[in-house]
Length: 256
Image (cartoon, rainbow, N blue to C red; front, side, top):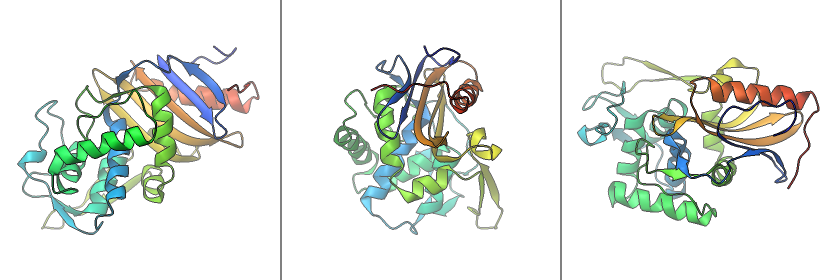
């Protein structure tokens, strides 16, 4: 562990845009990744080149029966164009939105979508990664910190993902009566305004712990940060802040 850097998340890696490692711990440990999954979900939708303006309704099939997670997108009532459904899934990590995207992108429904997710992972060289759903609710969605560096870098090449995951909040109108819903970014570092973040995604289920992946600009360098399996709700954010402060103090030495 680099002197003076106290990272408490059990699996972590920080890599610069040249591939140099600044920090690494348990980078090859395979573990559940929760809603970090949704970055892959977004890439698969965008790769499919389907219309982003097509209205998508939330139906009973989109209800989470595995974890019983909540959603303000009411079944049988909520409808949004695909681009806004994507934004709600990415920025606020709504599971019904993510499932609806997986259900409506391909003619083969969610099964075809999950197959596309795994093909994409293979194409990116994510050798230790498996997806079984588009939400991350299933703990069988598993990866490593090393693999997720590849996924975050790939996601950063999509302007839609960069723009969406780096915004603090958004308002949508999913109901016929015009009632607005305000969604906030699940990464409070994005909302703080103190960070230069290009890509961001949080994740949590009990089996995965607290997870955070980001591409951020620190000390004049574009870094990919992957933090998996933290026990405390704020630990990934605190670890990221400790990393930033440590780097700004000029203490780091990068290695291949």
